Image (cartoon, rainbow, N blue to C red; front, side):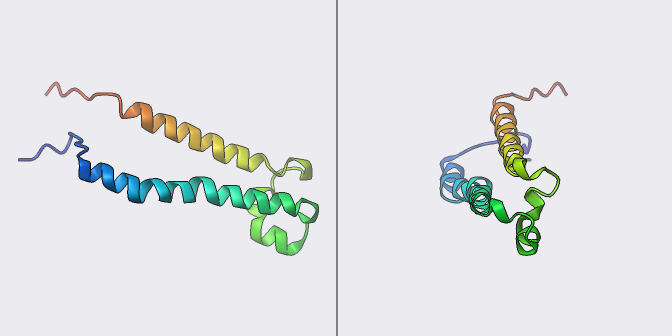
Amino acid sequence: MKDFTRIVCDSNHNHYNMILLIPLFLIWAVLYPGLSFLYIYKNRSNLNNVKMRFSTGMFYNEYKKICFYWEFVKIYLKLIIIFAINYFDSAVQVVNDG
């Protein structure tokens, strides 16, 4: 019977992490919000435009016009918290008393 509570990171697992997961994470978590921020920053004078509000309004609708960037600050803070929790949680060893 296999022990599924034990995580084993072999070379194959690390290989797939480096080739697949890390680039996808960078695209999804860093590149997409960064490019969205640059687009909104360049068009910050047209934030009330119907086309802008329809395409990117989810990032700044609940804030004043001068604080349009605050949602991106929140996104990156959440990413830092998620990274820290996952990094430090993997260092904790689970002991089975049963």
